[in-house]
Structure formats: structure tokens, C-alpha cells
Image 1 (cartoon, helix red, strand yellow):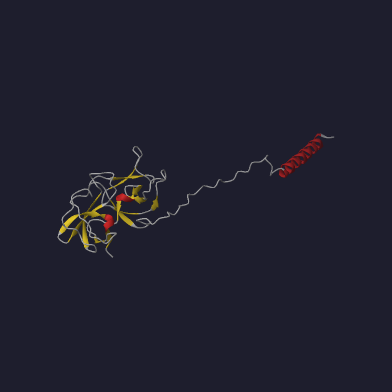
Image 2 (cartoon, rainbow, N blue to C red):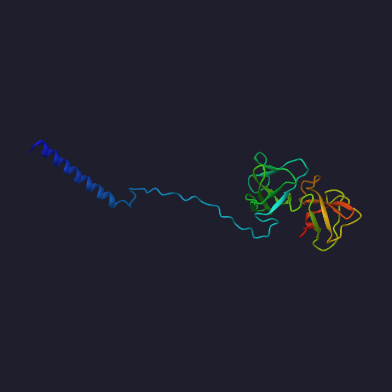
Length: 212
């Protein structure tokens, strides 16, 4: 056989073997010989609706409450109390911000506090006891749970001496101040300073309703 014919015959044999090999592979394509690479689906967090009525809903706005007019309030990066050493955003008292999300403590199921995600110097979570419906200059109505008159305090502390004159239930008042208890950090009440007629004093935020 001439060299050219021999080369053509060898090439034809090689092609036939290659086609047979490819056909064999096609039959085993679904076996473990081939590992098909598929996109791993990215898990998405599905918000779980809270089974209770919260003070604020997403899209509503509230006012940041601090211990003073000038000390910024820390906003942790996750829903829960501030953890020392872990950064977060800050917000100054009396700043009105919009609620972006609502959650309980994601790390402690025994913590019954509601936390709200807000945007201030950055995004962070604020506890409900640091977040008020009122701000200075607002008008409100005294509305106690039992319909009794609201006791006015001389200081933003329920253990302080009350004023002689209470504010009658149903009275329209002017909000002149807003603070947490600077004397007791464990007191989770929000204190609102109001002018009730000719008298000025502090009462609890829960004793007020927005003026409609």
C-alpha cells in the first residue's frame, strides 16, 4: 500500500474510533461520569409577620428619644440591644425618621421589645421605648387607659413628686419636651413634657393620643 493510502486509512480508522468513543460518552452522560454544574439558588429571607399590633408600621414615621438633647442615640446593625464593640449608625434625639422594617430581637427570643429599622446617619435598629409618636410643637389629647386624669410630674421620672394639679382626660395639650428617664436607665417609659392649660409638667407617652 502506498504511503498516501496508508495515511488515509489510518485517519479514517482514527475518526471511526473517535465517533464510537463519543457515542459511548453520550450514553453515560446522565451517569456520575459527568457532574453537571448548576446554579445554586440564593436563599432569600422571607419576612415573618409579627403576630401583634406594633406601635409603628412600615412607612410610618416616629421621633428618636434620647437621654439628653445632644447625646446621639446608637442604632445597632441588627434587631436587638446595642452590643459594645459592634458598630452601627447613630441618630440625634428629636429627629423624625421613617420605619423601614419591624422585628423582634433576632438573637434573644425572650426579649419582647419591638425594634424598628430606620435610616439616619446610616441604617440601624431602634427600640420601641426610644421611639415616640410625638415631637416638640405637636398637639395631643390626654387619653388615659381608664379615663382618669393624667398625673403630671415635676421631672421625667414616675418616682418624682407629682404636681398638685392633674391634666384632665380629653384635654388638648401642647408638647414642649421629650426624653427618656435620665435618672434610671432601666425605666423604659417615654416622658413627654406638656403644657396643660397654665400648668407644665411631664407625663407618660402612653397617656397621650395624636390630635386628629
